[in-house]
Image (cartoon, rainbow, N blue to C red; front, side):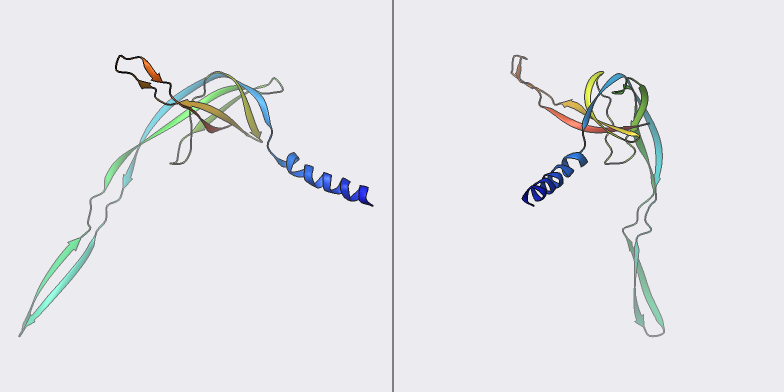
Length: 157
């Protein structure tokens, strides 16, 4: 009885390990970025009008004040699209792309080379290195190298 209970608990403990994402080796064979610009019209606001009237005998004297009004304007929207050629773990080659079409999407051109990636159906998630700016001494030599962080970029096909 104890052996069955231990085996069941061991089986349940291993379920989350099976459900977790596993990284697989992929290789970025090529990467190309394109910049696209578009214009988006932002509507203006009519504002709020406040009218005050003073009655004086047979006539009324009214004044109106409008606040918060604004004109519409055109806003330039930049969009980056990156196309990569990937060599998948089975040896096949896949063309995939990403684009930053919202404020929260991340689309970066990865350096060519091998990666450990997460593959989900029609997506591959690469951890792309980002290197910050180094600090320099007064004589122009590097005082401290730029810090490297990682951004997860989702490419789809």
